[in-house]
Image 1 (spheres, rainbow over the protein chains, first blue to last red):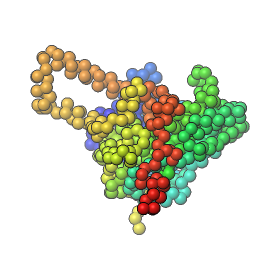
Image 2 (cartoon, chains in turn red, purple):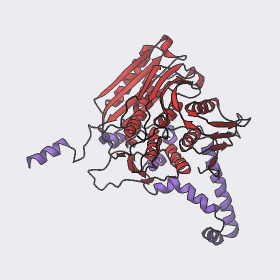
Image 3 (tube, chains in turn brown, blue):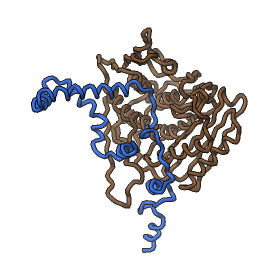
Length: 380
Length: 119
């Protein structure tokens, strides 16, 4: 969606969707952004608690950010300060998973003044955001591709927390970089191994084992190298709510990671309790969907790749991805609003029957980076 | 729904237009002395054209609304939320070669390369 209006540097948008994208790009580009009509026709007006929590996180990571909200919370003015980073902790709202917040830190981490060392508390695994395991499996490798030296990069789950109570804890550390490396990644390779984690908090250990059994059952149809760990938690380590789920990660011969997840229903949702066998199968099918889409990045983190490509040095970056998700399409549009950068998108031609890429139609993204540098790190 | 989903995945043309097209169409409508548009509406029947424009606008508004009030989510939206049963043979066939157990490209296949060595 194009911006509703432009006044000098200020960009005005309507609606609550893509709040995170807009704040993120605003912070990186230094352009202020104003968002109006946030759920203005909803019975429950204005920003949600989890969005406020996100804005707080932006405030904590930067220095000198100006935020103005109107009384009903339907309009937000955000003028970004300088990226500072550093060590702090943040209590994430339990309406959404930690993944929702962690995304931001991964995208901003390399450009901070001081290395990030952040403790996030809240829900580690939830349905509506990528879980912490998903990010660890699929987003961190993307970051590694672009920053080359990944010393000091760490993501650790110290406690699990399920919806709706939360109580999980995650530690994220990220080094600072002066600039990003332009990357050409055109070969996804073939899936060579499948790893996974089944986590269970405050439920019978049998649940975890049954989930492993069924997920493995499906994956063994395709590949013999399948191993799924179980992560049983009890007492303090298990957060405030019961639940279980499974995260699967597929690794290819060229170091691409795909991930998929399935999580049990919570008691708040009012649905039938989940059956472990169904959950395992669901996760496996989702992973196969992801593998079918293919490309050199997990479909949930296409936007991260796009961002890093755009911010790279002034050189050509090329990336092969699966079909673009709606979220990525909107991210590309926003990127054009904030940085005036346009990607070249095309479907790679498949000249040879033999060399045809398996799976869904792929997209080849090409762009020349804008040469974004970390203003806090001077060149010596 | 599934067919539409599959079609979307294999959509091959005008990707650029899909992504960035919103802008050009918006600029066009902003442009007041847009002769092309005028001609178009002239060639339409007077009233029929009018209705068309209104309906189009209404539809645009609706899609815009459906996008702007949704909660942010970065997952790939499945067609209708259903998951394919990948264990069915027809689907299995489609995905088989994504794994190392499937067929390799001729340039990478160890067996083919060995044959080349023998020559």
